[in-house]
Amino acid sequence: MTGSLISTLEGRYYTDPLIFAQEQAAIFEKMWFCAVKSGDLANPGDFRTVQIGRESVLIARDRHGNLNAFLNVCRHRGARICVDEAGSVKRAFQCPYHAWTYALDGKLIAAPNLTSMPDIDRVEYGLTKVHLREWLGYAWVCLADEPPSFEDDVLQAVTERLGTLGGIDGYEIDELSVGKRIVYDVKANWKLIIENFMECYHCATIHPELTEVLPEFADGYAAQYYVGHGAEFGDDIKGFTVDGSEGFGKLAALEEERDRKYYAITIKPQVFINLVPDHVILHRMYPVAVDRTIVECDWLYAKEVVSTGRDVSRSVELFHRVNEQDFEACERCQPAMASRAYARGGVLVPSEHHIGGFHEWLVQKLESAD
Image (cartoon, rainbow, N blue to C red; front, side, top):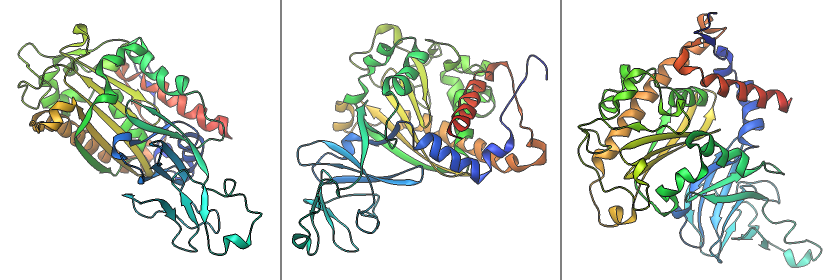
């Protein structure tokens, strides 16, 4: 191996179900996981179920307006409480098997013949709570008994990328509204998607629209390769749109120095944040199998843009094409991960060397869990 090339993970890391099971236990069930958009659960009784690692997690808004997260498992005999991905209940969740009934805050409130069992502690036998924290307008949950520091696990990723945690404040992401959501079913391992997002060596090859808007990406270095760097729009580009046409006015609180620039942030293990002057694009990954990942992508705009029905299609189309191009590339790689030609892995060129840090992080997580 020359100094210009460093090794990747071996192919088995992308194909071995046992390694994927280790990742579920050591990463997705231990770290903070961005689960749902808080605004999607606006009213008491609104809920969504999310698969995190090997667990189904039920997130719901209670009658006091708070979001709570629980394991989606009845405490009686283990039946799944909610089988729907999303919905709303009036006052409580009821298990469809034996009708054990839980308040929106998880407390056991009713069950057949419950009055004949006065020794049952209704809090103790309530739904199993999961740690939840809201940030950027999303609910982040952690299944660990003792969750890691949110500041170290999540917020630090912003500091490492932008140079300061305050660098994200001007986008006021928690005040933005969803202008468009697209869900992608990607037939590839989640790590291939992260690696793709972290580098731009491929940009000149498969992203003609993106490199037209951000010409420096054609040189192969992603913006997140450099701390604090934002990729500048081309001289003739008016907005972050598929044809470079004008978008919307920059977000009200955004600093002038961040105008006409693009920033990307990777928050391990499953979030990408893309920052441009007039909107934010946030990806959440849900790894469901060693070779399959659901990606939910939100395009977020100022509230007045969405409420007045302004046309967001040109800005959505730009990154939708980028997503489709990226995911097609990842799906092209996935079958080859099982090839004998990739048994020892591949290589990273200099503009990709920072991906090596992601690989080291992953291996450390798996080894520390053994």
